[in-house]
Length: 340
Image 1 (cartoon, helix red, strand yellow):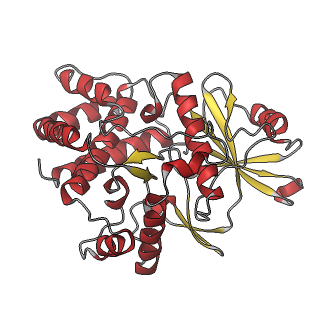
Image 2 (spheres, one colour):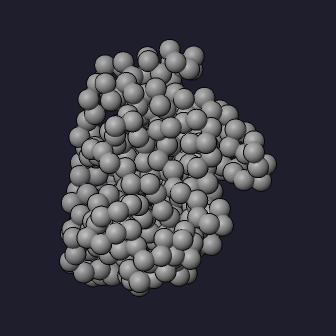
């Protein structure tokens, strides 16, 4: 995230680190990296020396897949972070889990709109969204997903029956209402900011195809609602993969949930089909091609609804809104290549 969160100061973060994790007096440096969360590097020494942690701050208004209200989103985020901690404790060393605080919490409130979590600092080389992984890394990631999908949900609460109960991830769009509202409002200019009207013009040109995509998504949603589910990460794309001295690590577990395995697998599959054959060898589970197509389409439509929501809302020309505009154009190009 290139823009800093509104209403959050480093003083308030430092206070949360002190009271929640006992990290009093640590210095903070903003890290404009990644997407979906805000990040800081925390250090116990002056000038970046000493112990380090990676601190994330999440906007509870920007995680629609976790709920519709801030309390619902915070509760969902806590379940997800607790699940990451539990998964790592089951022996899945590739899970980049947060550090529980002094009261055992994996995430803590930061005001009424944000939440904060603390992670170990990973010294490694991150991959980037849109850049394909090497063949060895794809093979490792496929094996990691096979291990994750074979982990029984009951394993997350063996030591504490009330600890973690992952929800089933609904296959629908997180911001479907925002997209539908935008599609019905194409006849009037959008005036909320500099990218609003260009976004309207782009969406208007693609609207018939978007409607066909939504109809197809609805048909497949009904079928997948009865499918068997496993523990899925949700976004195992290259941007959430890091290579460290200990091997490949999978980060950003706020999308973890129960779903068909294809929710993860479409992101590692290549045209060769090698990854899917390897997955079936490891798990004995065949892959559903229609479900792969569904989750590929759902991802693009979810991105579309998110970018449209942001650009229809009041905004200024910032690095964040510029990224939303660029990504909107790329997403519509991706959708144009998918069968409707």
